[in-house]
Every structure is written in structure tokens, then in C-alpha cells.
Image (cartoon, rainbow, N blue to C red):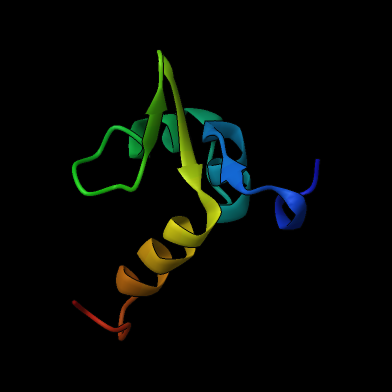
Length: 64
């Protein structure tokens, strides 16, 4: 499934979008403040929250 069609991103897709290794994507999902949704033992990132997180954490981006 393409990122544009997905409502949720897993660690692999987060890594792919950011251009980092899958292990870096997984580590990022464990960082405080990163917008994860936990479903049982599975962690996913709502796409809209991920976009907001990227905008807020980009140099020069809007800060809450």
C-alpha cells in the first residue's frame, strides 16, 4: 500500500518517508512526544498526526 493511501504508518513507512533506516523509524516511534497509537503490542502513527509532527519539528516550522 502506498503512503498516500494509508491512514496509519508503521515503523517501516515512517522510515521510508523520512529517508532513514527501518531501525531508526522504530526508535523514533519510541521517542516521547512522537504521535503513536498503540493497538495491543502494535504501534502505528496516524498519518495526519505524523504530518503535524513533521511540520512542528522542522526548522522554521510552527511551534505549538
